[in-house]
Amino acid sequence: MGDDKIDSRIASPAHLSSHLLWENERFFVIDKAPGVSLATPRASPLDAVVRLLDSLVPEDRSCLYDPVGNLQLVHRLDVGTSGLVLVARDPDAHSALSQALSERRAEKTYLALVWGRPSPRKGRWDWPMGPDTEDRRRMKVDPHGKPSASGFEVVATSRYASLLQLHLETGRTHQLRVHCAHAGHLIVGDDLYGGPRHKTIRDQKLRDQLSPTHPYLHSWRLHLPQSVAGPEIILQAPLPPDFQRTLDFLEIRLEE
Image (cartoon, rainbow, N blue to C red; front, top):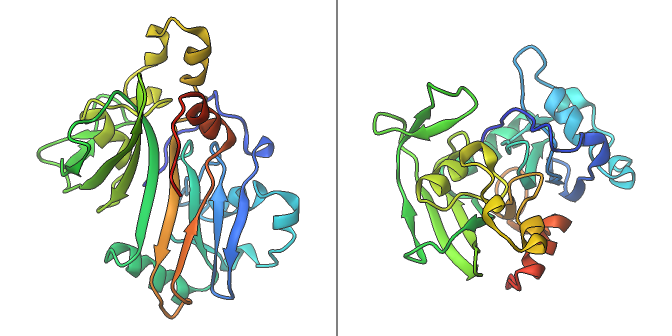
């Protein structure tokens, strides 16, 4: 997943709380809050790591004594996407973890609340992608673009929206957002790829629940194989409070 420009509706990182979920001497895993940008400009390659650490709750930040210059993001999430992010403490750990992800030996599972009810309930989207020449902020399905593939499975449905588990087979910028939108099931809160559909809902309480300030896309579960960076681990990040409240309101239950 890549990054995108910060939506003005999303609170600044100073008002968000990320959490340290797991660490060893080679790397650590943070549950990133939505709104924290991991954009990494060439001129300031450490800015993303600094923003991520600054977003940690104070007690977690005090546990990390690493010089920022030694840390490297193994992968990124879009600014509005929440959940698991890997940070390597040395170059060898970064290489091992990056290789595990690129070779699909590491499994990442996302959760997304999307509009409508996808049919079939389980499958694979393999639409190639490229930049949207009409809007530099966006990507689009393009038959001449790079190969891209995402697995999906419906977890539960309600009248207006469905909860999906999503699996990245490739890692293109905005891939899950583009594939969901192209399938006709835009991620709730992702106005960049489809507009505020909640405005068509008459029930004010339901309308409020389905108009979040960020896309309901969450990097939920991570299964890392044993490597030089550490043992085999399976980690899971709880949903952000607003995402969970919406599922509760829709009476959608996520089986652990």
